[in-house]
Length: 264
Length: 321
Ligand SMILES: Cc1cc2nc3c(=O)[nH]c(=O)nc-3n(C[C@H](O)[C@H](O)[C@H](O)COP(=O)(O)OP(=O)(O)OC[C@H]3O[C@@H](n4cnc5c(N)ncnc54)[C@H](O)[C@@H]3O)c2cc1C
Image 1: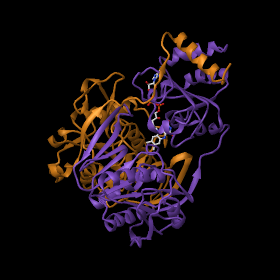
Image 2: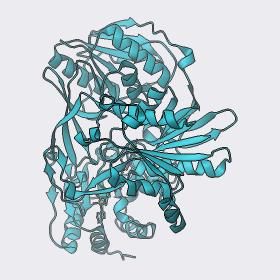
Image 3: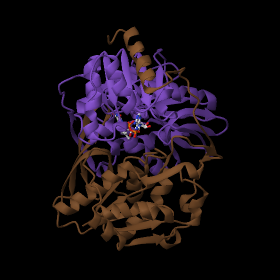
Image 4: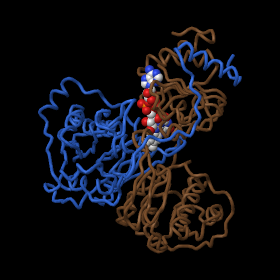
């Protein structure tokens, strides 16, 4: 049995950043493994550790060469190998249509033939939150989105999951494999990579693939959806700032609390 | 001229607020696009729901009497068929946890592009969507160069429509392929109550990832105790197991409406804001002047919580740990 985990290196802007054109200027960005994917990797690795039947956990990403460093984190935490898809066609900018991304990931999934696929609920940078379900649809797999508890019965091939709905309510759902699960934070405790894990990850394979290698061409990621403007949102609030030293800020806050009558 | 189809949402016998909001988004868009607004009501007590969403701006309500609760396989099939049958070219689905569970699949089946988590919609021959990126630090305009499009709309961004309407209600006979239903909802569970119900609190001191380490929590606990507030938090602290679930404020935690809410080291992600924007007075303490929490705060202090919180404890005669 094989588990595929989709991972993404996400960009996070520094506190002070500038937009140039339709992007945040590269020099203000830091890169990290997407928070939700960290939980997805952990869920897959735990499943393998607990079940001899799980032979392999394979991480797949769409990302430039730079992202290998981040992808290695997934390998250091226990994924066995990785596939990294990149192509000149991606240089044009972030693919905003989840179904376009899903076509690429599905081509990898078809080669790998996994029983289960874990993705993050969303990526922290573009917050689209649709790639996992789009991938399931593309593959004809079953799925469940926003999963915060996961149990899998290997014999029957049925997963028993909780989907975390709004307001503290969870939906309990049975899903037949093969299936895609979009993993919510808090489902487990992602491990820190051990020194040994980091060392081992150096020799694990990250196989680069182009669209052509996957039997796709540029049309696979063509989409009529495109960013035409990017800007810092205008604030609607007339926030009153309390300035000065920490003591002065504390004084200012204390004054408000007393005025509002919640503290004396 | 483009017709709009919008899908309503219900859970455990109750219509959810987003249903009224998506009517507002849908009727504005239908007007801009010069078309009609169709509403889809799928599953549960469809007649009662149809009655409740018979609101101003709606032209036709289509009821699909299939199942009691949300099931993504049924919704996917029903919405796909409704889109074809109504001839609509724009489809709106609320960006809820259930919306996330079927909108991308509908997009895949219809081969129509989807743009998620919209906060504003415009139409000028083509669809123009405003959406955020990078944890609300950046806004983008996204153009969809296609006659047909699907958009998921962020909850609480559109004012709910309350005024009654006179839409015609039609039962829609969806052809559901049961063999394509591979998931079964077996029930619901509610997160345990715990020692305090923050939705009742009048004063909340809330802490986020800016606290860095579990050991540092005693600092804000001391503050809450000194000023007599209940302690709340953002999600990551609960995910880490540092605080129990009943302390989590936000979309998947508690919706709170205190007189005063102090957000300390919380960035102000949309899912957090969903739970606290109803507070009378919001005070934010954050080192990052561009943190989105300042966009909704009444008072802001751009400062380090490890300096401001001890000073605040002292202001009220307490002792910082
Ligand atoms: C389906 C779904 C449901 C969700 N439900 C919820 C929910 O119910 N509640 C919720 O909160 N989140 C929820 N989230 C998560 C949400 O998207 C954010 O990830 C989360 O709210 C971030 O928490 P935070 O603000 O504490 O952390 P961060 O975004 O990491 O922000 C930390 C902040 O602390 C500031 N900071 C750092 N150091 C200091 C210092 N020394 N002094 C002062 N400030 C400092 C930083 O500038 C930053 O702004 C949900 C997400 C999804 C996808």
